[in-house]
Image (cartoon, each protein chain N blue to C red):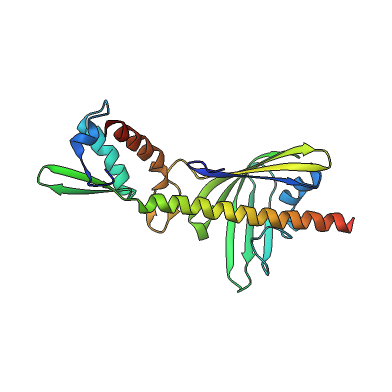
Length: 148
Length: 85
C-alpha cells in the first residue's frame, strides 16, 4: 500500500506466530532467509533488546557486500517488532520498520510497514534532507492548486 | 510553480505568513533541491524540481520490491522448516 513516506506489505504465512517471530529475531534463523536474491549469503549479529543493535551483511552472487543495520525500538514477543533500518545502498538512515504478527492459529498474518524518517535524515547522494520537506512541499502545492 | 515558475509574492499570497517567512520556507526547499530559485532584479522566481520527488517514489518502489522478495524468501524458509519437522 503506497503512502507518502513509506510502504506496507502484508503476507499470510502458513506457520504459527512464534515460529515467524523467531525467524525474525534469532540471528541463526535470520541468516537463512534475510536476503533478496538467489546465491546470496548473510551474516547476522543481533542484540535483541530495546536499544540493542543488529547488523546484516549480505553478500550477493557477485561477492559484493550489502550492509544493513539498526537498533531495536520495540520488542513484543511474539507479535510486534520495531527497529530502525539504515541502508547505505539505498541512502537510507534511520528509517523505521514495524512488523506486526496476527495469530491465525496455524497461520500468521504478517504486516510490515517501512517508514522513511520525517526529519531530514534520509540522504541520497549529496541531496541531503530532501525527503523531510516532501510534506511541506505537498502542503504548499496543495495551497497553490486551490489558488491556481 | 511546476510549469513556468512562480513569483515569490504569488507564493506567499495564499498563506497567512509574511513574505519573509515564506521566503524562509522556500529556502529550505531550495536547500533540499526541490525548488530552484532564480533572481531577476528584485523579483525572485521559484520553479519546482521534480527529480528528487521521483527519487523518493523510486526508493519506496525499491523498498516494496525488496521486502516482497525477502518475504518470498521467508516463506520458502518456513516451508523448509516445516518439511524438516
